[in-house]
Length: 296
Image (cartoon, one colour):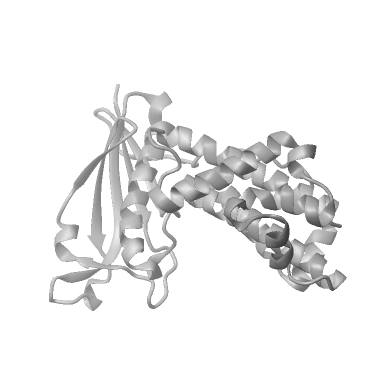
């Protein structure tokens, strides 16, 4: 027995002046069908505050209604996730041109979710979007929180946390963004750490040493954790944790591919891209932890 699913989502949940999107009225008169993982999802978007809408073909963004069908009870959560993905694509289309509405990649919020068995009536359903378990099990230390309250989070922790969110916890995951953030975190952390060491030693600028010992034409970002680290602190991630270093090299390669092509790897499906990004984020955390441990 098939089951109909209906979700209503808000693409602009933060309600204050300037956060509403503005779209053509024609868009509110259309139903869009997209295929997500083999599931046919139908979407429509309503007009928002019609009293404030223009008479020249524009209207404020209202709620998104998403419809789909599951084959049976066991498929409800899978189809619901497909509906969320489709709604995220629609809200992303709005947010990419009108960033005031919200962050691209952040799923819109469910206002309601209902199911209806064949021949029956609509009834509410508690759908909880799935989460991907994070791999850190450590208890959050009091000292860390106190330090953050005094000095704010550092750039490295902020970037790594965002990378972890987009690869492990966001309902609308974004592997490309996760890889970019993780790579920036690793590179900027190494450079800022080495700059601080040189400033404390009064030995000159980092760049002078880098390019005095390593030819610029052969320098790569991963060298910060190998040849540069040896030159400055006498240790190499490649020598001590070769698996992590290999993952770090891969992270920077993926960063370059995203920068040049917009993709992690050609031919990968969404699940494979996500797993690749998750592995890269783990390696980024491990590389930064290693550098912090030897430069305390």
